[in-house]
Length: 93
Image (cartoon, rainbow, N blue to C red; front, side, top):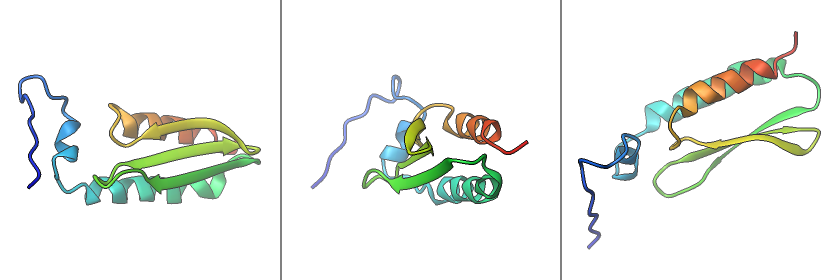
């Protein structure tokens, strides 16, 4: 039996995902953003997405000429806003 003790008064808002909440809509939104913006990246940029945990967290990495330029986890606060901001920054002019 799996038990989880969480103090609901101090738990971060993103911890609800880790408690088994379905996050398929968020994963679809992430995939849609990557599909939309990956078509017009500047030369040398590459986006990598991977499932990080059994809870469904996603890790996004953006490389420039093989070197890591940006990395974030979907469980981080402001993940979607940061992802959009960085994807816009690496678009072709």
